[in-house]
Image 1 (cartoon, rainbow, N blue to C red):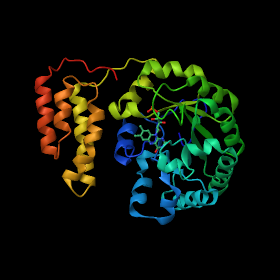
Image 2: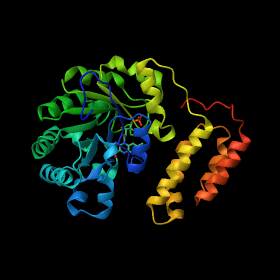
Image 3: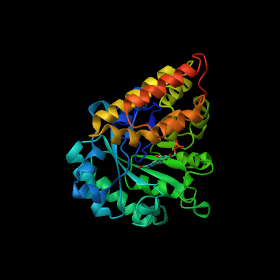
Length: 329
Ligand SMILES: Cc1cc2nc3c(=O)[nH]c(=O)nc-3n(C[C@H](O)[C@H](O)[C@H](O)COP(=O)(O)O)c2cc1C
């Protein structure tokens, strides 16, 4: 599946800043995610070619098909950044972020702020498409700025006319942030308004929900936060789509994955303590919904080494009988 095969229903890992680095993307790929994207990278950062930006855009060949997501508001700078990324890492596609609600991005007119400025959004999309051809350019949008300006259908039509080849729609407005529920009715209207594939995104956390979202006519599904707690979500969703039974992982399997993620993080960073401190928020996500979570999370919030982690895991497994089923998250 280089880009999107006809008739296939790919499952995407949603780009998440500070989360979807190469290590986590590879974990999700192994669990069944079909298409991966970097977290959003600033066009200006690319132009300065600093080491941090290099870390954001690099990926391994097993992550393909792989996209690099860019944000910015200046059409020429974004186009130049996209060209540089192509020279730099040769991704399978470039994705443009038109959805980020973060103030530091919006106040520089990037991300979701372009949903309020359709002429600029169109110029950005056209410039990047022209600069990248023949490499496909995709976009990720929210359904609008706020409840009074839901314009995803209009935005998607403009993007399609600009040569964007696939559109992921997160079913929330910028004003919503991550609160409330994703509006899949608007996602369905977008899917029926354009001919390019539309990927639905928002609140998919189990196989049954994924299956029910297919009724919206989307060509693929994108999963974000649920993967942080449960990377097996991709296996589960695929089982549901293919009508085959799914056996959730045991507690041991889950800890094995968490341990492996931490060990890889430690190997990639200069200091074990620094790496493990950085993993604390990820450990909070991984342990959400686990049995006896409260004392467990209190210990993990102070973990500073792999040895300490091993002790915490052993203690938790000793305390929790093996048969305790993991809640479906
Ligand atoms: C921690 C975090 C970071 C995110 N960073 C990005 C990003 O860099 N680019 C982007 O397009 N969306 C970003 N998002 C939004 C997600 O891609 C996705 O649209 C959103 O989480 C809704 O999907 P979900 O309900 O499956 O999590 C981020 C979300 C979270 C929670």
